[in-house]
Length: 201
Image (tube, rainbow, N blue to C red):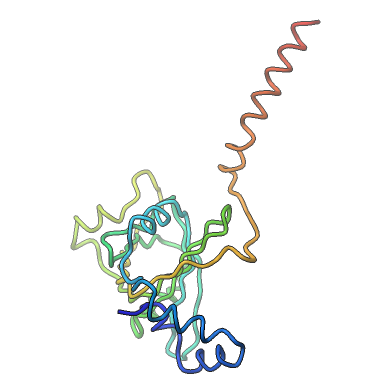
């Protein structure tokens, strides 16, 4: 079996561009020799569990892609098994563009980012919205304890393929939580020095 992500992404037009620009030979080898990358493993599961947001693209009836950022508490996108992702769809601006798009075309593309390391995980899949009021077990699996937003529905994504992207051109960014953890030793040292100075007066 070849690399499933490349099978989907490398259309004839993409391969034509690769030939024209000189990268086709390299990617032809990866297509046949690389891993299938259609089942999430421990590395992907650990990476996903640390994310507090991701970008998701759906396709509308006009053919236009629609991209939005979905956010929640860290780990709100859950690996239910090696082929299935799920998350609680919390109440937002109530435009329902993605919900409407999924009713007509179930294909989705996700990008998950770690801005501190530059790692990117791309996932292609097929998504469906589910009414979790009729499935208490699924609702419990998707819910995030302590998160106060209201869950409107669940979203399940059948993973077709994934690919790790290189960190090139990713500008490092840090959350307040990460910054506070990094500067805490400096703050502790400042407090210690201030106490020493106060003791000399």
